[in-house]
Structures are given as C-alpha cells and as structure tokens.
Image (cartoon, rainbow, N blue to C red):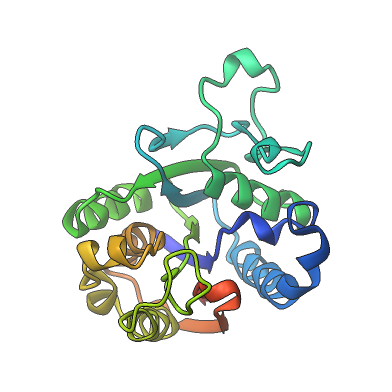
Amino acid sequence: MLVAAAVCPCPPLLVPEVAVGAAAEMDAARAACTDALGVLAAARPDLLIVVGPAGPGEGGAFPGGSRGSFKGYGVDLDVRLGTGPRDDAAVERELPSSLAVGAWLLERTGWADAPVEGLGAEETLTPERCAETGRELKARAGRVALLVLGDGSACRTVKAPGYLDERAAPYDAVAAHALATADLPALLSLDAALARTLKSSGRAPWQILAGAAEGTDLDGSLLYEDAPYGVGYLVATWS
C-alpha cells in the first residue's frame, strides 16, 4: 500500500558540484526537496521506490546499491541508490540521470529509513501502462513510499532548452494543481504527446504515482513551484 510520496525535480543542477556558480539559484528547490524527504521518513515505509524518467533503453528496475555518476557533467561524483551490493560487478546497469539525482538527494539527507529500489520510466509509456506500473509498485511491500522525480515543461521562456511554447505554462499549471491536490484523474489526463513536445520529463513518473495512489486517501501539498532557466520545477508531498 502506498503510504506517502514525494515529488521532486531532477535536473543535475540540483547537485551543487554540477551547478557550480549557479548553485545558489537552486537553494530553495533543494530545501523543499529536503522537506519532502522528511515526509517520506515520517511515514515509516517498509520500502522506498525511486521513480524517474529514463532515456531509450535506460528504463526498468534498479536494485538497491545501483551506482550512478555525474561524470558526464564534468564532475567526479559517484552515488549509490540506497544500500546493496558494493561490488560494481554485482550491479548490472548504471542509473539514469534522474535516478542519480534521486540517489544524491537520499545521500544528502542521510536516508536510512527503509530499503531503496529504483525504476526508470521511459517517455514512451502510455498513461494506462503508467497507472498499471503504479499499481504493481504499491503491492511490493506492506508500506510503500515513492520518491517521484521529473520536471515540468522545458519551454517556459525563449532561453529555455525547448524555446518558448505558449502551451508550457498552462501545462505546468495543470500538473502543479494536480500534484498539490493529489488529483489522480488530472494527472492521468496529461497528454503524452504534448508532454514530449514540451519536453516535460515528469509526465510518466507522475502518472505512475497516480496509479500507485489509487484506493488511498492521501492529501497533497505543493512545497515549491518555479521555472528557473525556463524549466518548470515542482516539489510536492502526498501523505
């Protein structure tokens, strides 16, 4: 059963070593993520599953102890997803970027409240398959918590990675309201094709959350909403 969820953005810029001179610009987002992880710990889960977007061929399950790296961003920084095999040979695949950010957030807050596993969600997943995946995840333990990673649109300004698209702000507003109110139908109604056009990596992970929350009575709270660099970043909790 799903007992709590935290929704956080997953840009590598959350990691100060990656952001370097721009690190302070993400301080508010980092603080909100820390608060959100506190809600997960307070729920006393038996299992924490970190769900984040993954590129083609990067999706699927990742066991505890899976390793990630920020070397691709010019930073010699490695992370581990919870505890697990310390032998690299025992971990088959490296974490996608989003799950590496999730592992960094957990390490930063000293997570030791429950075993951790990961799931990479490719953007080709349909809303229906996302919801079904969420139902499967919540059955993994008696008390399951989710750390759900993903960004809103990357088309909020002319300097955004996807340039300016007038549909971006309304899309993010719908997602923010749905996350703030734990509105499952609203999350599941997010259009996959529009999300791809707007470069929103959060659509599939958010819809997995919606599936996992079916049959629960969780309340939502929005802790952070902003669009630095023209990308929509949201932090929310469900408990």
